[in-house]
Length: 447
Image (cartoon, rainbow, N blue to C red):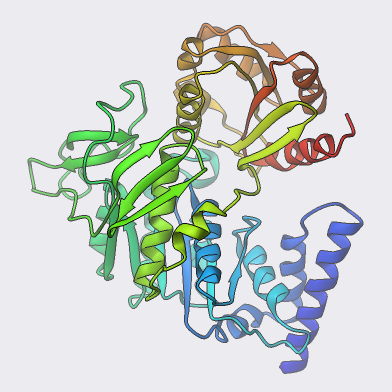
């Protein structure tokens, strides 16, 4: 068995090298698939060698940022961690993250593992190892023709919690769907959230999931919203309500930078967007729940650079470019929030595909509040990708003058040539990798 484990680790490392250097692809999925073919128990064996604890990060939005930031914070405390930083969150990608971290002798020297998990695949993944902690961020409609409605995702996550009763849940207490799911699971849990209102009111046009109480079916009432269904909720019919928030983000600021106070510590970050307050708070809560003091957390956050299209920054000539993944209405609306906070003139490029990983159904575009862009100081607005015509139609009904450029590379070149020097690029899932490669090449000076 040890020999097969070693062969599986070698195969994973060779596959990744070939994928990166020859095919210019990440290669994690293939590396993990080949490794598991050679030794199906590889993930079980390697995860069992983690010395102190395994964190699983689940939820619709924010998984990659929370997971990578948590890993960065763990390493800042002086520990060694396994992490699927590229966002490869299915079984093969997770197996690859462990195999690539292992030595050539098939042994893993890691104190912690920070593992992002796809919600739909989590039931299959936990057959290989049992996490000690799960971070649950939020639940929004996402890829309906793959996941189905939110009930399907909740059922899958509920099975995971039932299968690992000793797993402690770090849950966003401001989110009623997550909170009700965790309360019903019987697992021990810790809450994080923002107890007091941060702005006068949420966006009245926003789609809010889970409007009805999961316990009695009554209509949930809110004292205030932060965004989406996140806020201070209660059910007057049965008494279900937002639980006490144990890790409370206070004195929240967001704009050019985000900041908040938790446990008397002032945390600052260059990551834009209100949603990043929740992401940072989730990582902090997980770190503290896992028994770490977090002495260097603020330093880790300030030095954290988003990767893989999570408000990732590029310079192309004199144009500053931000690339961000937005794959559902909630994610897009939060990205539009970031655009609205930038009061200067900016160009926008939106790229939408409908490949299998994205979901073929793009009707969710009509739930995105694109109308707000008409109130912002925008220059060139371009749409691209496989479903650029659908996006053009949506823009027309939003009252926005946009231009279509089916080829994303040409759209980027045109934005740099004709734009104002500041470009926001919003992409859905499969558009992310191609667009990121295009921006990387252009940032290297090859326009």
